[in-house]
Length: 370
Image 1 (tube, rainbow, N blue to C red):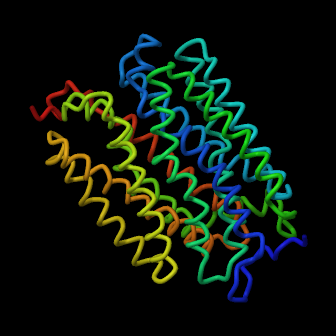
Image 2: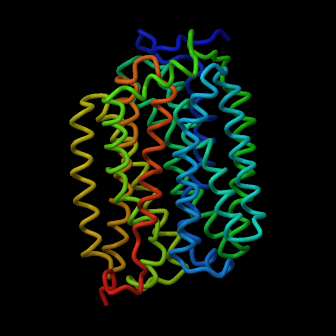
Image 3: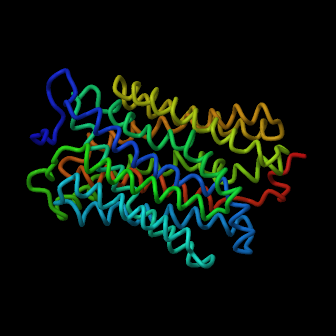
């Protein structure tokens, strides 16, 4: 099969390999999403096993997120000239290795270091996968193509995270990372089989990619992502202790609430992508306002099981911002597409790291409603 044009096709139909490519890339996103979010449902188990406090265990979340922040620009620049299929396979194998090693971590420090390693391929994977998906459809459907690819990530919060959380609760938190590693290995095989040969864009080089760092619009868009997602992660990073200690839910009910978050993410991803293709900047602004409203509602709903469950679903819809920001970066990055696309996930995970670190423990009067 001949490689598609690196830019979006001008016709009205998607490239023939689009469906298989999206499924393969989505499976990789499913593995990454499960690995990123499952730890948020297992913080008490990790804290107990490693003999640290829950806020200290939260540093494991931040370590992974910082791995994304550092790894996304570094790997995007160093691999700018790699063929896209080879690069995506290599990134997925590195992610698998990081998670399997995390399952064998002997202590708190080593686990943080290995989560940092596991996070490094995350941003570059999604950045390159977004470019590949967008290149196979007409220009007016780019955000929807990115949204479909991102269904793996959002779908992980509906299926992968609850399953891995259940596994971690019954077989130990390490088993959750083993599951993630196995899924990542399977994804690397699927990517090898499904993706056409996609060479790097003509003239691609580390120096050209670094050109994105001098673009003020790129930095502005990244800033919107880092700040815009910060509130979502501040809530979701510690959703389990909040639901147990503030709402009073049983531990068995937690996976169901996590699944509601996943439903919200899927809905937000699909609706946000469609709206972004119609009106990009209004979608970004409207989603930020929506985010502020649903996050403020947590102050009211947290003590009540039904209300907070619905609120968690609404918080998940904030992910509608992701495909819109991805397309905005493609529009303003010029020839430095890979780095700009990868940096979107650096911003996303900078918000993740800040959200986890800014938490006050559940026994603090600041968040104890009852």
